[in-house]
Image (cartoon, rainbow, N blue to C red; front, side, top):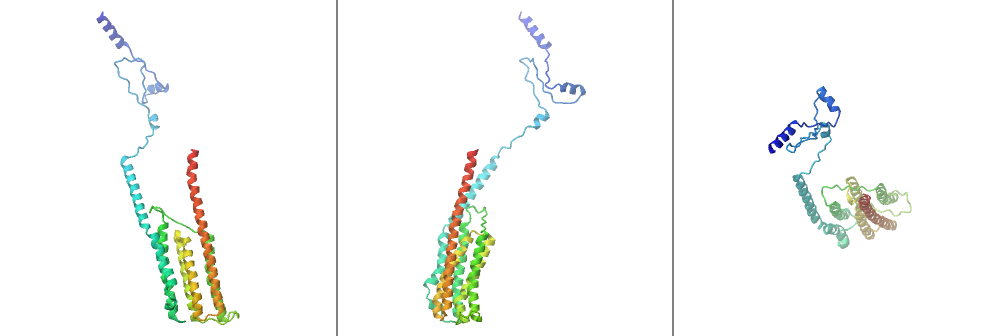
Length: 321
């Protein structure tokens, strides 16, 4: 009985042929014509001892598969290391900037305000002569050096923490226009008054002021105007963030310079109209200095509004998503 069952099972396995079902009817036609294609063969009757068939997909189906690039472990480690180095460098640069916050104003105070406020006027002015003119110009040159160092330190503090980021600050056209207008007015008004007094075109401006006395009173003033103009043009062309502070520094010292000129007017026996002209210049530059401080307040408010707007945009985009 057992042998008969084994014989019948062997016959059934040998006589059973698998039936092939083709998914695409066109493949039969391709087989007849002799073209080669990858076939997907599915056997409907398979014995339990036969292995599952190996299914090969076509070239068209394989072409639609896109392999995604996985991040490399070494690349991620290198990027993290670079980020850590950038953060440490920015922290080191920021630590070096901390003493500048005290050093910059100290340089400005030592070079500009201390000689003007505490240096006796008799040690600088020895009479209406060339020596006094050179002494006053040298005193202002010390301030110019200190102001230059202060602006360089302020520019360094205004730069971003990350040295790789660029910082370009461009002043608006209206700001440039009014600064140039203030400088030209401060230059043309005393020049025209002195020229009118020397040539006699303005008869009310008598007696005329001698050349050496006018140089003692106004030549350092004109030189400081030229230095301020050059400094502002450089800050505008370099797009330095200190363009907003530059006129404040020079105009504050110019008020002290003109107050010193009022004291010297009594020493050189200047006419009354010269004293009134210097007083008018003091009032003009105090007005311009107040306008500059108003611009600083406006710019601080503008910067805060810009920062608030940029912070609100990512939040709105996240909520919309």
